[in-house]
Length: 303
Ligand SMILES: Nc1ncnc2c1ncn2[C@@H]1O[C@H](COP(=O)(O)OP(=O)(O)OP(=O)(O)O)[C@@H](O)[C@H]1O
Ligand SMILES: [Mg+2]
Image (tube, rainbow, N blue to C red):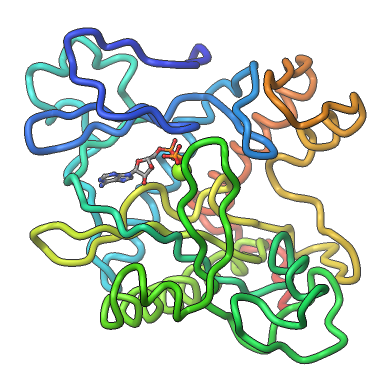
């Protein structure tokens, strides 16, 4: 599969371009195309990761199905043979990396669940002893498991800005009390089920971000779900709290960007071939571990 950096489907109506996905309006539906773009430190890099969009799409499809008893989702179909005729000319580019979804009114909040202390949660905890207004016990180390998973919403930033953690009360102000409570309930339930599956496959689900929207069916799980782009997966083997854990997917990219001393301002640099290849392997490995057949002899370490 060649690297797809951006789609140019000229006779379709472009709806939006995110950092990774290109969205087209198709009648009442949306076509989500996951490209091979990769972002780091909130910027899209100049080099893509071949096949990454397919990996993200296949992982999301796995989870939509796996979680369907807990929450309805936006998926209509990912089978290109079932796409409307106007998409036929693009079949080969779309296969494996796209889905047709119900257009949703997206809630203006990112629904983050954390089971472990990392990233912005770790930063907030060090400063204030809490995350999003949730008090945590003192003395926790970076990457420690939390006493229980917590719901830590964030603003959905405009492109180029960083997401900002918000309290549950601020979330209520944005989406209303009953929606906020339902989104929290759903997020925690999904995290619990997904983390159980991940650990069976040798992966700790440290934290993850969901996006929900409203359709005629009520609240649906939308966007991508439980992919390496939206979640921190750590190999359970070698898990060692007290420091940052190697990120499953982007570690090579981040390490490289640190070594060249990029100032984290645009334009974002190119990646050398070996970093691309190692990153591609990590995404493929995540797909295999999460969705492939269970390996009977796989070591299961429960931290
Ligand atoms: N069913 C849906 N209806 C409407 N919008 C959706 C739906 N599913 C996902 N989206 C939106 O599509 C976009 C997906 O693109 P992508 O993941 O590349 O964006 P991003 O970089 O994460 O965020 P941004 O949109 O801020 O650039 C997101 O803005 C997401 O909120
Ligand atoms: Mg996204």
